[in-house]
Image (cartoon, rainbow, N blue to C red; front, side):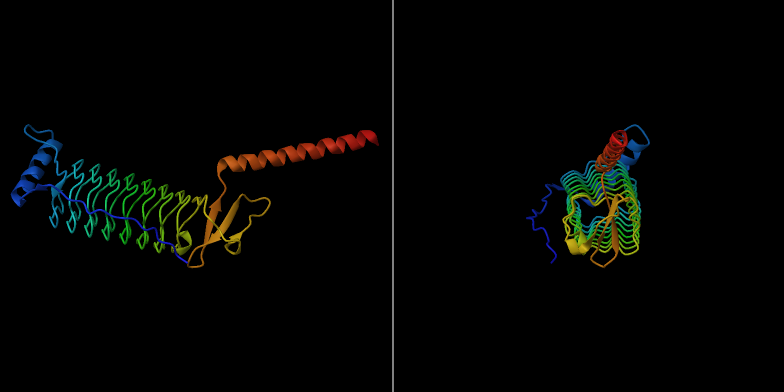
Length: 270
């Protein structure tokens, strides 16, 4: 049975009210700041009420949206590299085709947000609420999704190479066709209910997962890998950590040396 983590979610309340003209003025000054022109200033939308605003195509690299209310806003094809959305409300917000490399979404509320085909390399989405969020085709290379609830999230054909999803809740998440090479799924919840059909899980790590014996196939003596079944019946590679591998190899070496010594002792007796 699938177990969904329950948590109380407090709606983010923004204190600043900004008009459309004020938003346009802040964006214009930010563009000057990016060009290092006199009179420019970094965009600061922190704690602002911006629900439904359209920022599509805007150049807002390194802009500050901390604690802002951005539900139903649009950032289609916007440049948001290094932008800060810490603790922002982003429900149903559209980031399709946006450039978000290095952006910070720590503890943001991203219910049903769209990141379709967006670039999120090295982005920080740790502890962000990502229920029903759409990352189809997104590039999440080396992104941090540590402890993020990804329940019913869509990551079809996404790139998750080296991404950290440790302790994330993967209940009903869809990773079909995703590139998950070297990704970390350590101690994740509800992994068996996620769909990894045709996903590339080469060298992906699933350490600390609770397994039923019926769903676990013990590795061969000469192999340091195991396999578990996903909810759709596909097989997932389960790696033994490097430290454990070294201990196992050391143990084998000691055993071989012991056998060799016993053999030599018997030969001397004879």
